Image 1 (cartoon, rainbow, N blue to C red):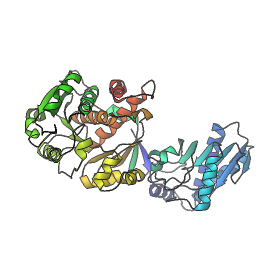
Image 2: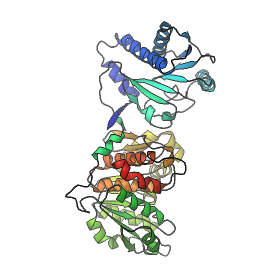
Image 3: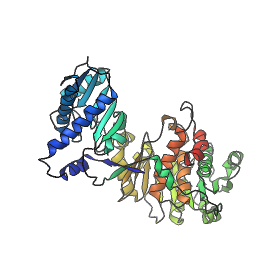
Image 4: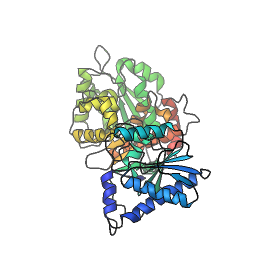
Length: 457
């Protein structure tokens, strides 16, 4: 279910624990270089000429070992960039790289990218930060990356993941020491409870969805439908009374409750009391989809979170002006980069450039689980291993997919999963469901909902 993702420091620690290190470092380099050469030969069997571009550090040493083994296999090898070569081996920078490449290295990286040849990167594409996935300058676009011991955070977190190509992990004889981050596989879905012979609609998972201002009533409908398709047995929806006709027209199986609102159709603090019996029957709360923004909605969200003991997913407009709320029940915030930027008082560009650190900072500030949405999903929680989910295909970049994710997480919370696992499993479920679509072209959020039973089945 969880594949380790190591940082540069964790990789260095694993090397230092190797028997006899540093005297035995050449043994590790020999194994690493051999793994690169063997992968290159297997993947490109017709290649006769290799260009191996080596830096001055241990990554370059791995590259020089690979060059020697390629020569021994009868291939022509030059240890510089040769644009006429069949394959380029990128051994410029490894896990120790930080920041931006200097001008000469940056020009070399740009030349590698421009040559149009397949590229095998050693450990990481040069220019990618192993510990964060950040790319501060230019980076090599690899066809395949041969990494050692464990995947690195930089292989799984954007933008680094988009430079790595296919990642192959080679065993070089190190012991696993434990890491602060993990990549979540689809196996996580095996941990989601399913309805059994003794289940009732409430014990199968009861979800309460709240949101739906005028013109945005579709959002809570998507959330409610997703919760039901994620195997929740009972779903109720609370919306402003003026939005109720739209919601009634879209939802059949869900219970609907009209709530008091202001003149603009937005929920007000008094709306909390109107949810009383629905809260009592619910096992989890999803608040925010289509909620709208006003001083009244901010106070409504604060009161709802403070006065209910339900596990909660807080999404979309419920994140606007959200302040930390002390809650004992599991709480999951699901921002995209812009929403997380507001929570942290920074910019969306800063969040996008530092996704891993931003998610962890928000988890510490708010004292709860934070799921950062994007091209990959990062789930951070105070004192816990950070999780990365990279199962989402391109089709998930569509309006309403966040509302679907909220409903799935709420269903999993209602089934009893803890916040961190529910968030990770929810992201995985949506990714797997979208991957089951016959085409990613034109995929919409409702398509993902329809595929959720297959993903979970």
